Every structure is written in C-alpha cells, then in structure tokens.
Length: 74
Image (cartoon, rainbow, N blue to C red; front, side, top):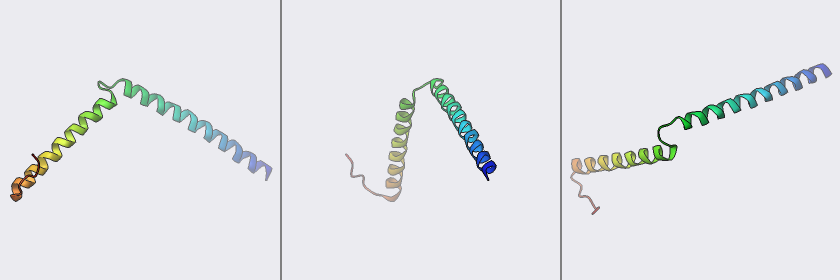
C-alpha cells in the first residue's frame, strides 16, 4: 500500500514537472512567433476587423439590391 502511494506520488511529481516544462516551451514559442510577425497583433486585429465590416456592408448592400429594399442609412 505504501509502495503504491509512493509510486503515485512520484508519477504525479513527474507529470507536474512535464507540464511546467511543456508550458514554458509553448509560452516561449508563442512569444517568439509574435516577435517574428511583420505586424503586431493589434494591427492584425484592426485590419481583420476592417475587412469584416467591409464584407458585411457589401453583403448587406447586395442583399438589399437583390430584394429591392431601400437603404435606411444616409
């Protein structure tokens, strides 16, 4: 019984060390990936949001034109 508990404790400790090492490696790789980007993430988000708004406006205009709906926007 004591041997089993010791083995479970040792296994848990090894797993914890593995999670810590893996987590730090993933965090380091993520920081490196962000540093290597041509644009900072905030600029990428702004650009993507502008594309999303333009696509939504174009889709809305096409739907309204196809269905003969008058635009209520000025």
